[in-house]
Length: 209
Ligand code: CO
Image (tube, rainbow, N blue to C red):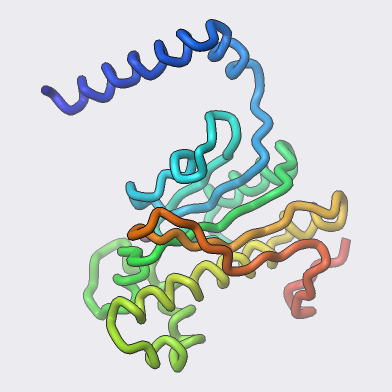
């Protein structure tokens, strides 16, 4: 069957299955959104945030890009963050990486992949900072997976260094920021790090409110 038609047909079946259980499902859903979480994840098709956390529509506000990066000049990302933190007032922000991430693997290689080199360059800086720990790994896969973890922790710090997060910490003592990594082989999430209003920041990154 035509792969595009397949998606449209599956959508009809999905919508009907919800209506069968609750005729008001979409009417209720359409009224408003009040998600508990902002998810910052990788674009990788194997890490669908709602599915791996058994969540329903309305529960997770989402931003995904290659290798789940928090880049301070990315106005697309900053708009999502600002809206989630200051308008939706989410109590939790999750940065979720995954082992065997293609973007992280590309950062460890010397190949040029075109435009994406500039995006992945951010991860090369994280590698450089943790070079000795990463190079100590036995295999290429282990090196990639160590950098995957360091990359998540770096993005959590990048979030904490935004004035968007710091203003929310000042005004409402939230959100908490969680760094997680997803194991494609097991389907399981692992917690790496958490930051919150009580976290200490280097003074150069700290804003006065
Ligand atoms: Co990835």
